[in-house]
Image 1 (cartoon, rainbow, N blue to C red):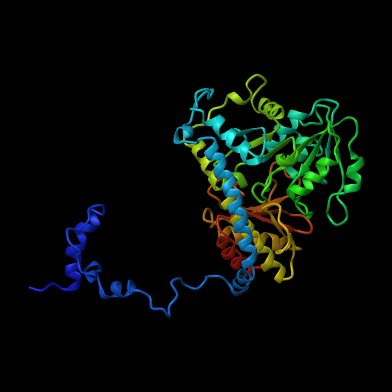
Image 2 (image 1 turned 45 degrees about the vertical axis):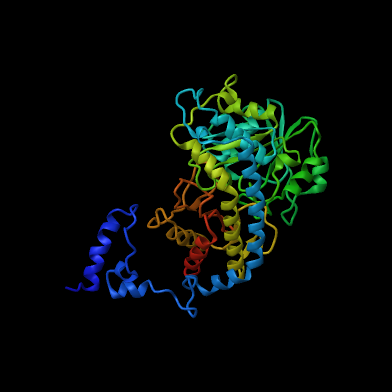
Length: 461
């Protein structure tokens, strides 16, 4: 009795599906692996006239922008290759093995050497003498504050050479009065800043005379923050360092700048850098944490601020699987940063073609992963963030609402439907609700995610 195609398929496939690791005793006719003629047609090889992939699901404006950015994307891939090699060599030189991933509890004294190994890898990657990479840093602001308190003592002066710092540092320094206590100002540290020039650049002439005898630390913010200025290149940072008194320490807020260039600030003379692991160096994998890296003496001083004098770098537990995530995220960072840069290129190209001011330009140099777009109106900023939120994998159903956020002087709206809360290495955007209503975009695990989000944005603004 002859079996129908569907019946034969059911008989032949059933044991194979139930035991996928056990090969069949004999090769079955190809057609018997499909349950119906429709399924068989779906699996037929495509003819040469057909593409192996469907057309891009992007709106025309985005498709056009993608095609125009081919050479820029290729340059980013070259950067990723260089930085990936640097990271890989650091892992190899430290002899990283799976035994370094184990967690610890309590005081964290017995952690299998993972804490020291991660510090060693990070220090080599950024060209520093030493580093502390800790889950106990719960934000970039926290890490930067520990670094600043490592340098500064009562009677010292902190000099910001790149204009006003990021909003969340205002209370750390004591610029903005609040109910909080423990700012640098409270401890007798004075503050001064060198204003930017009219075009948003560093005032090189003023920097030559800015350092005073009691200026203990100059502070350089690499990224633009919530301003319209250009982010600083490592070459700019090096030039600023050379203009300082050699007795004056240099601290760099490195947030959003890691792996965007082939060099990091410690390689050109910065005494300390600090940043967050839920930004660039976490590679979208790190669930928390931050870092401080630079000269060994000052790294140890920052560690004492994080923990307590006498405890320093040798204490602190890392529970569960967190350390593996920190290692893995660090390894993936150059690739994730590259995709974020491509996303920024695409945003700049699409939005500038629509008549909006963008910073940086699509074909201009990039020194961080932030892409700013001047939207010129409150509702446009809100609509932009709502559109991006709808394209997030987590909380796409949530409608972002502007509000007061700890550490920020103005109302801020955030779109961050991310796997890690607040992770700006994943696709996200935000902006303060103040003129000129600029949205700051960052992150993204692949540029195509921003391509899809831009299609949604263009529907509403």
